[in-house]
Length: 189
Image (cartoon, rainbow, N blue to C red; front, side, top):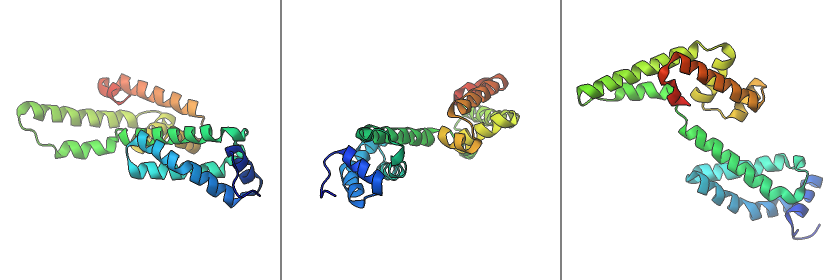
C-alpha cells in the first residue's frame, strides 16, 4: 500500500477492501476537523458538535460499504452531519410536554391577569395530555415518541417498522385530531 493515498476515492476503496487503518487514519485526519467545524456552525454547541462529528464519522465507517461511488464520500459524510445536526436541533427545541407542568406550577403570578393566564396554561396542558391519551393507539404511540420522548423520525421508524413517510403521516393525523379536540393544539405543530 502507498504511504499516502491521494484521493478520497482511493482511501474509501482501501477501507472497503480490507479496513486498512492507515486509510482510516488519513480519512479521519482529512475530514474530522471539517466535520466538527461544520457541525459547530450548525449547532453552536461545542460538545454536541464534537459528538455529532465523531458519531457520523464512526457511522460512515460502519456503512462505507453502502457508498457506491467512492468519489462522493465528501458529499455523503457532510450530508450525514447536516442531517444529524438538524435532528439534534429539533430534539433540543422540541417542546417536551412533561416538562411544562412543573414550570407552570413553579411560576408566580404578579397580578390577577397573570394568574388567569397561568391557570389557562395549566388547563390547556391538561386538555392536551388528555386528548393525546385518547388518540388511537397507533397515533398515540408515535405522538408520544416524537413529542414526549423527543425521538427522531428515523428512530420512530426503526422502532415501529414503519417508513418515515408513514410516521410523518401518522403524526400529521395525530396533530389534526388534537386540533379538533383542543383549539389551542395548533401551537404544537
